[in-house]
Image (cartoon, rainbow over all chains, first blue to last red):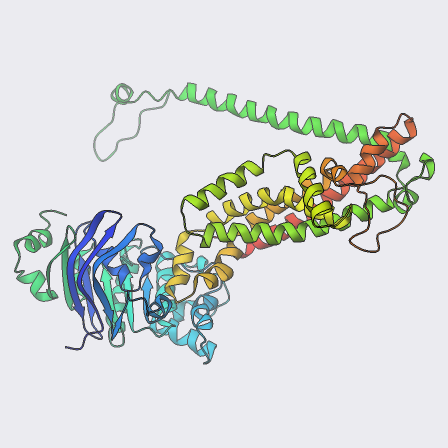
Length: 250
Length: 307
């Protein structure tokens, strides 16, 4: 299997406390991979190493192991984290559009990264791919903050797509949304997998089962089981995985 | 007392039952709220009353002397012929320069400390010192200005030295308020920009500073208002009270409205007291207009980014 992004024997810490312990995970192209596990199991911390967003947490430390994106060692000194973030996009837990127009939300990232194409076209294609175009095409110049929560989150996805990323990381993208908006975003993820490699952290096991091809279950910083989603949900190999999926703890 | 709640999903909740588990003290809480409201209204009233008295007294004393001649004449030993032209021009020039220096240095330092500097012992030490500097009396800044700008850098007793001194004086206020403003920008905006492959600088310049600008402007307004009214440090750096020419360069000697007012108010003759009052009216008007313009700009900036 072709590998797009991978963690190899990764141990991560905040201060002296190890949050992720000797975790390995390899993700192939154009797949949706779900990271599940109880709160505090380290899944978000792991996700944020793939685009080095942990750099902004002062106590964060990479203890050992490495992250590879394509043929780059993400944490090597030779690699510019800005380049990684430009290729590996991110959608956050709480929708965080910029306090500017819908169009500007889309165009800002490309403009600072030297985009030379047609901006109007970029706005339209990004919003279409994020299934938001029909709702906002007549108000591209109004504020992104005037949209509903679900629309704001799709705007954030459109903003990530506009960068033409290779990988999109989603950190519990639906946890602040109502069920209808959640369903729309789940549909969207299924569409997006044709083109992007998606990693999604979720608390919602039904969501993981619905949208992902592969699922990784983490517990207390360790990778308990990583395999095909069907297998994880129907015939988990580990007792712990089964207990979590059956809702016996978590 | 409250009435019995309506039947909720088939069971009636009895008033007696509720009262045993909740001591809501509603009557007392309402009284507390009323007292609190009265106290803060009284505080506001006192502040307004003192200001009104001041403005009224000064107006009564100086209004009659306020005319076009007063604005366009140089000071004179004869009160009737004295004017504030040189003080007005001096104040305007010095404040303008002060704002330029203090905003460039102050906002720059705040951005560095808040957005870029590593959070370590050194930055904590700097932070503590800036807080302390904002409490230093203005006269001390005057002495600093005299030693550094007038003598050491050889600016002489000039407009330049005065502006640098005032800029030093308001620098801590601008740094502290700008940092506060930067801190109110939601971290999620920074992360959103960084995750799109923006550099720290692009994030700060395009998103953080615009979002913080209303707050930064508030700090600048307060600081500049203070600088406009200062006389003491400028007397230290050599502001003179009799200047019968307009400055040709930034290294000419200067006077300002507060210095002129201070001088006139100290004279025994009643006419000078009156023209001091007239000059105060001009100074107050100047501060109000400056603040008004800044507040209008701020309102426009606030409209632009709301979350």
